[in-house]
Amino acid sequence: MISFDDMVEILKAIKNDKWGISAVSDEPIHKECKIMYSLKNEELKNGMGEYVAVTAKVYFEGLYDINFSDRLSFIDDFGKKHNMEILAIKPIKDFSNNVLYTRVTV
Image 1 (tube, one colour):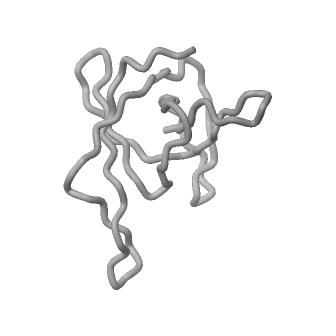
Image 2 (cartoon, helix red, strand yellow):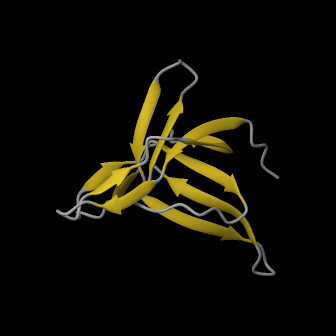
């Protein structure tokens, strides 16, 4: 089991404007999670085909409704606030195919 002792703010994406650019909500959603910072040099290809460095993996309990257009922000152990783009979303399942956690890579 994972202890969910961290907190993130999620800014949900709202409707696209007339140019097709999605805006984020002004009201953040606070959600308990577990943040595991990346200690090795790990890269992931983003939606534009560019390689970006992975900062952390955020684990939510169960299946959590989050999209690539949403934004995550959290405060690290040094008190610095990070506003992050979501790079990958993966549900973590057990052997009976039940979703235990949702892993969000930022």
